[in-house]
Image 1 (cartoon, helix red, strand yellow):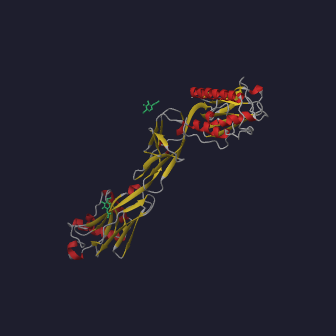
Image 2 (image 1 turned 90 degrees about the vertical axis):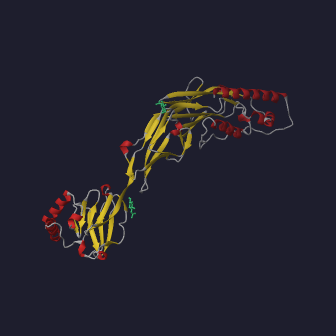
Image 3 (image 1 turned 30 degrees about the vertical axis):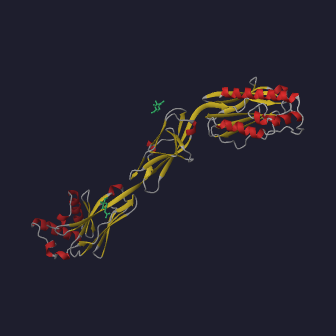
Length: 448
Ligand SMILES: *[C@@H]1O[C@H](CO)[C@@H](O)[C@H](O)[C@H]1NC(C)=O
Ligand SMILES: *[C@@H]1O[C@H](CO)[C@@H](O)[C@H](O)[C@H]1NC(C)=O
């Protein structure tokens, strides 16, 4: 048997060989011509391995190392043969049965493939700009009889990429609906895909708080406003760089409102602040009205309305300066968006102006009436109480963050006086206060 028969030649390759021959490759022509002759004369060849001592036959010095290369880079496959003498080395692509090179000649027409050699011993196959089709087994053959060969695997890896048209883009959904965010990625090996929030917060998912959701699909049953945010779909497969896509999820819901104190007490001449918290998406328009429904314009001498936004939450404050008899009554805070409207009423009631004596008595029992909304303005610890009522309010959603510019410090009434004095009037005052306290507490309970 002879040289070319040893190489696994497909018809296409034979054709290629002919093309090369006719394309004036003198060296190859010689080899090829001899083969043709040998085939015709029943396989007697000058290159017959039987002509050599077995020990002197070509020998692979090492296995062909596997090569892993990222798509687009260059690959180099090495075949080192000792004792090659007059034998020739060919590179063959195993799975397609394609001859890539024989001896010093590149046979394939693939322009990305080239060959280099050293000392008639090392034979290098170069593949430029490696593509996924190049992945597979490559064989280095020597035309001994029987043929000797070694195989090496070229692994072509592809960094992950996200298939945009199969991946969710920004979404706007109604609260309580089911939402499904999908992320598709390709790459080799197949990428691992996961979802997480861009801000690093946990995701409420199937009743648990998780930081990462594995898989292509992030299915949120009965989406809530807490799910609103930017999500990242991250695909990775160990081939750098990993890739991610941002998907913004907006959750729409009609305005909701909560009022820390539905009953406020103030005495004539005092400044008082009413508060209201709302949540809405899209962002609501918020304002205050009087009992008669007149919109209150902020910035007058009388009123100052301030609203602080924190995502879909708003904190509204209405400051009424120097309360007079006409100011007692009801106030409404209103929030409106495209999905609905809501309002809440705060009642401002007159309380007796403190005298120095009253205040002292009141202070002595302040711990008993901490929850009182009608007395908190005249207490010297009113700031602490304000915080308490706020903390109590956290419970309703468990995650409220304080607005950066909270309510202005509440003016404190004068608190000087003699602790020894006790009168009937303050006692009565206390009873009234306690009564109001209980009323407002029950009222709050009912409203919640
Ligand atoms: C090359 O990779 C193949 C599988 O892909 C494995 O069977 C073989 O042992 C590897 N050879 C070397 C030299 O690592
Ligand atoms: C939301 O998903 C759950 C679970 O798959 C299903 O039972 C429910 O019917 C879905 N609701 C809607 C409105 O599609």
